[in-house]
Image (tube, rainbow, N blue to C red; front, side, top):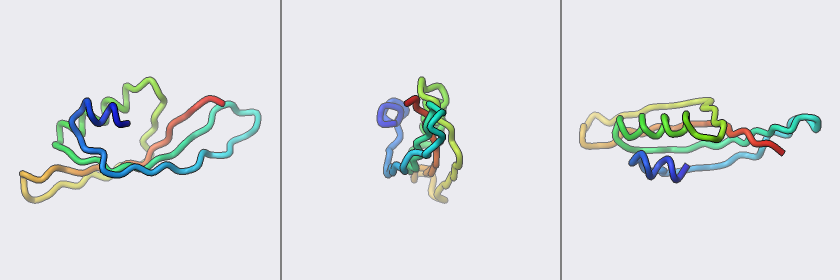
Length: 88
């Protein structure tokens, strides 16, 4: 996430990880959830989301909130909740 935020020109303000889903013992794939708050220009945020979409890791955005300021000089903010799948 840090690499994607730096390359797209956004600020990664907050990030929090939740515990992995317990899953079934037979299943080898586990989901890890995280929430993040990111600020930047519209185009920088768009580039950040594209970086997540094309990442080698399987990232699924579960929820997204987009907020802008009435002042054009203020950056936009997105809040996302996503899951990352990993093999155990």
